[in-house]
Length: 187
Image 1: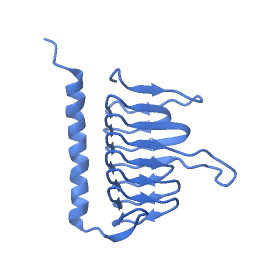
Image 2 (image 1 turned 180 degrees about the horizontal axis):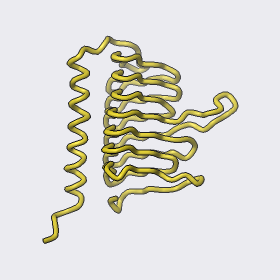
Image 3 (image 1 turned 45 degrees about the vertical axis):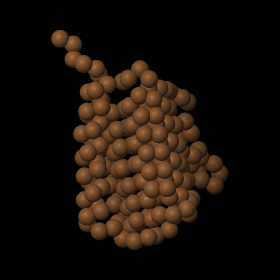
């Protein structure tokens, strides 16, 4: 792990990061956070699992400057709102995700906001800059956009293929960045 990364235990909960994951410099990963195989957490992201849990699935990428938090239990919501992000998910730069669920192969665009109780189903997409207000659900293969976000259209196979390509690109790019940050080989 790079020296400019904060990995901190709080309330007896420590981050669990798969050895194949890429954690870029500037990241802050605190508390009950689980990061899966070949996931990538890019420069200057904050994942704060201090009041509930955060899960990042395999091959998922959380792009630069994204903030992920969760919400604590209360009398109305006894389980609170963890943030659970599945496998092969693309999360664009500067996204804000709070107490939400994104299923496998979901997509959250650049600077989008996903609030408590929201669900993005598999192959669902939230457009760049969109605001998904509390409790909304994006169904499979739907694109939502706007502030507040609303259904725009169904996604075609080409759009889904583009997302799959993005996942592969980020896995490979993360490996290249990990190697570059190790510095020149000693010899």
